[in-house]
Amino acid sequence: MKIAIISDVHSNLYAMETVVSYINNNKIEFTISVGDLLGYACYPEEVYKELIKLKHISIIGNHDAGVIGTTSIDLFNYAAKKAINWTKKRISKELKEYLSSLKYKEIYNEFTVVHGTFIYPEKWHYLLNIREAENQLRYLDTRIGIVGHSHIPFILEIDKNNSIKKIESNEYILKKDRRYILNPGSVGQPRDRDPRLSFMIFNEDTHLLKLVRLKYPHEKMAEDIKKAGLPEFLGNRLLYGT
Image (cartoon, rainbow, N blue to C red; front, side, top):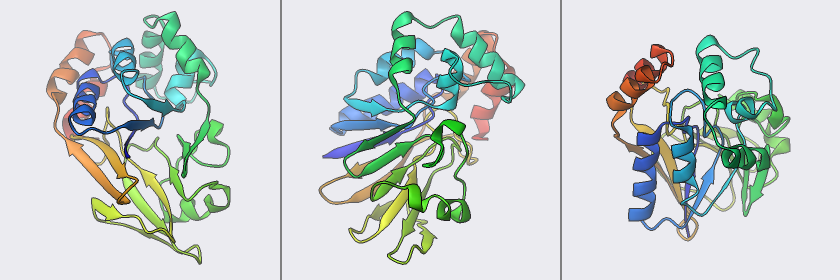
């Protein structure tokens, strides 16, 4: 079975439509969504409707939790706060109930899925580098951990001695005697200076993991964010992947 791993859609409809089209065209049977479906951009209901077209599991992200009031947004920056308050006024009861049903952590087959870190996922800490990954290993419940939150894709491989190395290739066969921590990057707001959307595909039969980067109408999305009355900065950053 082929599994799509997506994260940080952030209400970016054009990016999400591109991903869903790719998933359907490539006969990908299941999707893992790593949180932050909402926030920043201006199509919260529309991205939700795209997600539920797919057979999937999802967890909650900090922006999702901010929208339904289960996490404080006091420490969010001005633009993030404005987008969350904008979103709160525009989402349906159905979407609120869906977000309220999501957990901070899910275990699916050999995957442990959290938005931020494996310990205290509800605190929304970041996992950004090998040193931070070392501190998380004892809390990884399965062979493969998946995180999001940073909007920057990576593959970390852990050997039997808990030594960690970063895999630089965009296509890599996962070894059965190794553990892994994966970040698929962001569908809706990439931050690695590449404006193309980012996600991963894992083939359970061949163990091939692939990082997928796709173009989408990011300039149109930036314009729609501005027209919606959201901070122009949130659209401009899509142009440069920052």
